[in-house]
Figure 1: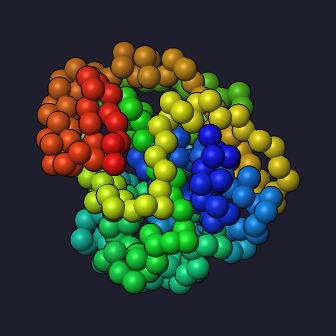
Figure 2: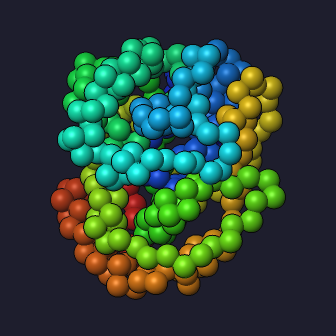
Length: 278
């Protein structure tokens, strides 16, 4: 799967975008480990997610926290941190980050759909450069779309987005905020409008990524070499622990059905499964 992405990209730098909780971190790391065999690249996970002390530049590379736990100040949590007030407050930070990442083909990076929207506001010329050839984009999404939402907001509740090695999640009871689940679907809309006509893309589902075997390589970026752990029964447990699962699913499904109609064929719903048809 990953080898076919690199082959399709014909040696160009492959970047990653998509929907959170669909395997984007796993794909980014595996692409990076394969690409550095033939091209010197920096590693830039969530290159434009400016969160104090979490996503920083170290030795020319954007890195994340070295463990699963991420301590994000309340005002920087998504979707709150995409208000006009916060974006204005962070404007200079974004300009500085864009200047640090001004040559996209020199970094294997991940940029989420919501971040593209902010980049477009801050520097529309860089936005076009980021999306244009010769960059190639691997786009991840989850067919079981609501499972991604469930996983994301539980991770936000616990501040643990990835598990490693012998980690075992002790899943506690939690409640979904329907307003936030609707905001999550905005990322699908942003993804659609950002990549609707792009030809330098390849769409991959988390189900397809589950068949990819991690490779081991020598890299100075120890964090990039770590592979997040996958729990097969995690979603079943999350459904049991979510206090308002059924109600929020039905409400959010109405928003998703509306989005699919607005997409004019970009998305297709088959029961609870979502397909990118572009």
